Length: 329
Image (cartoon, rainbow, N blue to C red):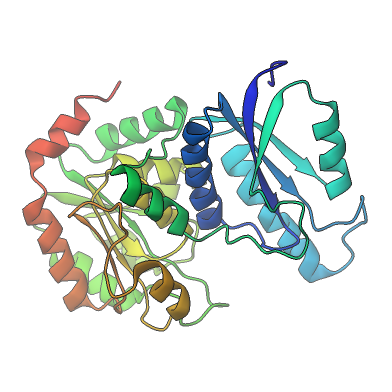
């Protein structure tokens, strides 16, 4: 709750310019945490300005589906806030409603983006350039972290259902409405899982995407949602994992803004211009460690295996066990 006279940063997501997405929200929240430090604010608040005009009802089926999906994203991540460092969250049905709120508050608000009230500008919420430039200047970034409740759930899950095996979290995107946008090649992943059953690992499949039921028959595969996991718990599992593997999509940003080693596959033809803008000819973000890669390659059994072996052999079990010493379960 805002305290009179308190300096706070208000991140404004304008649905009129960009629909909500899991990855976009995580990118924007990372940006806000950096700005909170730069501007010496005491906390970060988050608000959404709806694309509904002053309470106008949603009348079309496609608009209703979009509204429900966006509500799911924000409701799961932000109500109550599931990410550390986030204070209050608001949903305003119009820009006028937001302006009225700001005029009535007793705290000192800095708003971001600074162009929030310029309807002619579209802010790149999903662009990592701000964070990459900050890293180039400072040499580090604050990692996103989830609230203790979700961290403890993920740690307990690993101790009860995976230990003493090493937990490797995997996200297999499957959105039939978006062909060519880094959907997983399930047959290639099935072959990979089956070929690596002798390793001392367990592959934890996260997400609510449909998948090949043959996955349930593989001894070294665990389906997180069979144990009551959901979006925020999935993201916490990503950050507590030995390492992460999967397809480029929203949940992978939980790994990108963490110390967790990862290998992310992105179809070469997916978001070509954006990837060129953000990565150039590199296979990693500026703030990534040597064990964090984003590859613009298709997910064949050969490439998955190559990258798995690379991480498995380079990331020592001792480092993983040292991370586990900080756990509270």
